[in-house]
Length: 212
Image 1 (cartoon, rainbow, N blue to C red):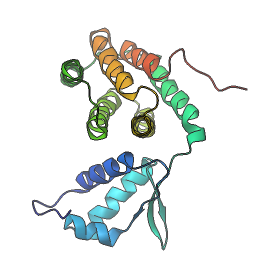
Image 2: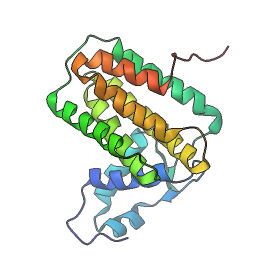
Image 3: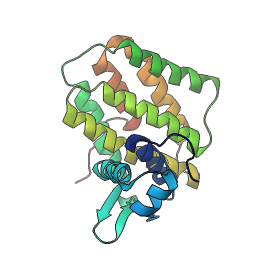
C-alpha cells in the first residue's frame, strides 16, 4: 500500500507499523527496512527512522545495525509474567496520590464503554483499535512520566496476548476487553486511584504474584 495523500508524520507511520506488529502472529519476525518503508509512505527516511525509534522504545522492535529493524516476537513462557507486570503497574498507580479524571478522558472512556454495550468486538482489528484507545487514555491519567511510559509499553504486550488468544481461540479476550472498558468507565467519577484498581482487578484478578 502506497500513501497518496498528505505525507504522514512519524507518529502516523509508527501507528501503522505498530498495528501491523500487534496483528501479526507472536512468533513472526518481520524485518522493517527504512528504504522500503520510506517508499511505501512516500516520505524521506527521517520520519521513518523517528517512527522506528519510537517503536524500539516501546519494545515492539529491535534495531540491528546492518540488518534493519526486527519486529520482536513474544515468548509464550513470558505471558504470565507480562500479565503480572501490567497488573502491578495498574495497582501502583492506584496507590499513588489520587487525582480526578479529566472530563475529556471521561468522555472517551464513556464512549468505549457505550460502544461495547451496543456490540461486542469479534475481529482482531477492532479489538486492537479499542484497546489502543483505552491504553492511551489510561496512560494520559498517569502524571509520573516514567510510569506512564512503562504502562503504555506494557499495554502493547498485553494487547498482543489478547490478539493471540483470539487467533488461537483461547481464553476470553473479547469478554476481558469489554469488562475492562466497563470497569474503568464505572470508576471515572471516583478518581484515578479507584479507576486503576478496577482495571488491575480485570487484567490480573487477585493480584497474582510470581510463584517461587
